[in-house]
Structures are given as structure tokens and as C-alpha cells.
Image (tube, rainbow, N blue to C red; front, side, top):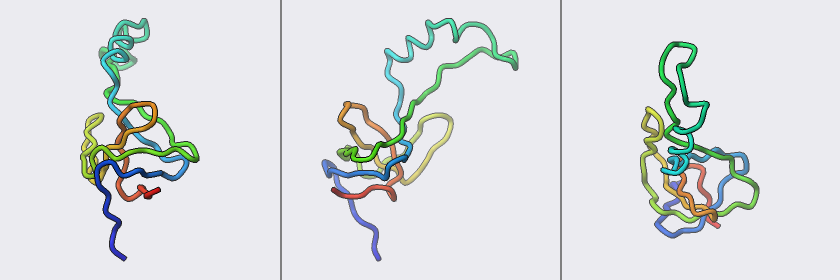
Length: 104
């Protein structure tokens, strides 16, 4: 059975409990850098770095719009191939593996 093809602006859904990731915003980055938790050193004696991304889990009934059907997730210090860039109702763009997408 051939894989389903998706295009920009398709409305999709994901299985409940799927983790989706996004880059943190500039406001979130400044908040993290100015917080007391980011000051000083960690247990290894290195300075504390702010995370490059954030994520959440999909709830039952959430729908998303495809922004980019084929994308590479470069959040963190790795590249994950075979992803799509999707937009949620809250306005954030998330990365998710393409094989999890289901057309509504």
C-alpha cells in the first residue's frame, strides 16, 4: 500500500499522546536566561544553557494544518529526517514524524 501524500494546508490529526516539538520563542528564551535557575554552574561545572526547543503531547481531537509537508527537525543537537511542520490552533508551529499524520 503506497504512503499517503500530504500537501500544504491539509488538515490533519495525530494519535493521542504523540509528542510534538517546536523551537522556543525569543520571549521564552529571554525569560529562561533571566531566571535564577539559569545562573551559576551545573553539577559538572559547566554553565547552564537554555533549551533550544519545547514540546507537548497531542490530546484526543486536536487538529493541525500542514505548513510544510516535508521538513527536517533540527531542534536540539540532532537532525530528525522524515518530519512535517504543522501549525496548531494556538498558533505555534511544531515538528512531527510524517508517518503519524492522518487526514481529517
